[in-house]
Image 1 (cartoon, rainbow, N blue to C red):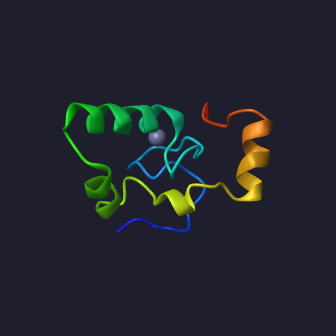
Image 2 (tube, rainbow, N blue to C red; image 1 turned 120 degrees about the vertical axis):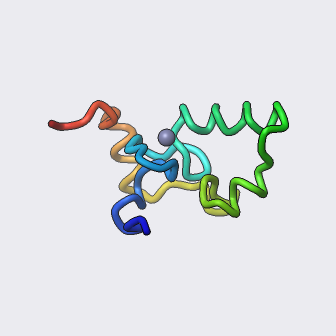
Length: 79
Ligand SMILES: [Zn+2]
């Protein structure tokens, strides 16, 4: 099982540490998700059930996420 607390501010895609942007996904994975849905490889409902996409109502980022985003991406890593 994943440590939900640890990934809360990150993209919900497994092992992705990019900052969330849309519906729990980073920009890259949101685009990937959209292409999957467009190509019929997956549906949004399916992805939501698998925890790879958050409900539209929960897509908003907490305040500290906005701060992180505005300060510049931490996606490059700190180490
Ligand atoms: Zn991601």
